[in-house]
Length: 179
Image (tube, rainbow, N blue to C red; front, side):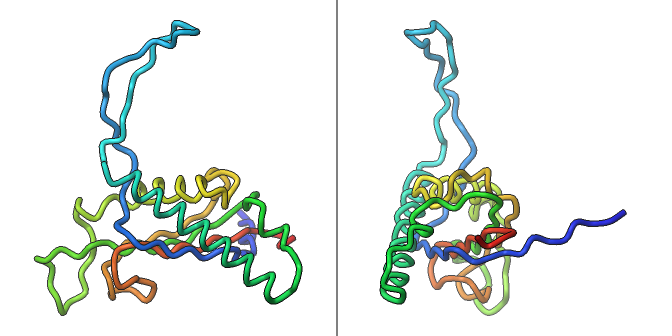
């Protein structure tokens, strides 16, 4: 059996988000509604976590700021408008994310600990809310383009990429041919 070679990755954007990461996923059933035009009945499902919308907004705002800074840096260095930086990333993408979550007061202070409690959130649900925020900022064409992801949950100061407060460091890469 042969394995396909790994796709070459090309760094495109680094996003730093300050704020408490929030998982997306659990929905609460709130009844049914009928579409007036079609007569079709659909369930009304509402996000259970009140923290998801503020987190997604923080991600969207930080993504737009990072993209604007990248464009400004290009203009300053090259004295031209970077049309390639103004379009959403498309094609196969990779994301590396380090989530810095709140460390409980009861956790040991001088020993490495791991954010494995329900309070820190499921990493897959943290990824979902974060990808949706990046998509909302139009930095990527759609989060379905992300074919490879590495995600880490950590406490402040307990990982080389950890922030000093809750938030996330997100690196986006295109895969394959850099053009």
